[in-house]
Amino acid sequence: MLREVTMDHTIITPKLKLILLTAAERGSREFEWLHELRSDEKATWWSLYGKAKSPEDTEEFIKACFPNDTSEKTVYRLAYTVHEQLPQPANEPIEGESPSQDQRDKSTRFVGLIALVPLDANTLPLPESLSLPPPSSTTTLTLEIAYHFLPTGWNKGYATESISAVFAACRSNPSFWSPYTNLYVRAIVNEKNPASLRVMQKTGMIDRGVYEWTGKAVFLAGEWTERSSLHICGRYLLE
Image 1 (cartoon, rainbow, N blue to C red):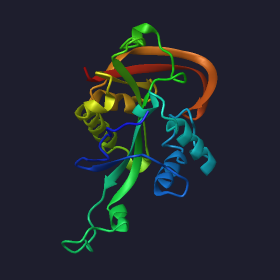
Image 2 (image 1 turned 30 degrees about the vertical axis):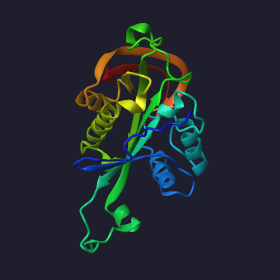
Image 3 (image 1 turned 60 degrees about the vertical axis):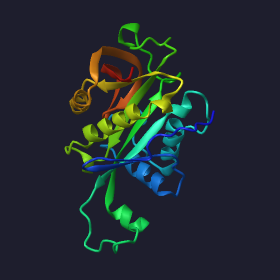
């Protein structure tokens, strides 16, 4: 299914520049950004995908997050790369001239990634008490948000600032979500990750409750675990 309506390609905030990720072919600067992120142990500490040990691992992550098919729900997937705005260098372009790509790259520094993906067969199933709206809803699209930041972007408020900006962009482009009239976003946050819980609170996400997950052992936060206490947070962006 082809979409004629698109989301904002670039979002500017007081401290950041967000760029809509439309492709990340190997050898591209977008792939370099993602590989830097996925190769960082601290940035992937809470990721079920784990740290990338090779470019091939990053390619698998990209395929999983950004499939090439154009099925109904897939077209609603969004990802924004997050870039810190740096102080302008002394050799700014001459008035009337456009800055070169190299100059634009040097004016920002890649620090993270935000992704919004519709629920699918691989999504963690939750009990009805924590599923808002009901899975059977035909007028509401539910997205799950995930984000990762390099340590250079920590403790600066970047997660809160960038997520708030993406939420605002989602609200200001209601036609993108057609035929859905309601848009709900949820997040799953490990109880041992208080920093992310604070980000959820600051971005208006409501803590709906805690899901006690048990299952096959996964490597997370530096250890193998078969159980976790997961906070289920969510909010409507359109209703």
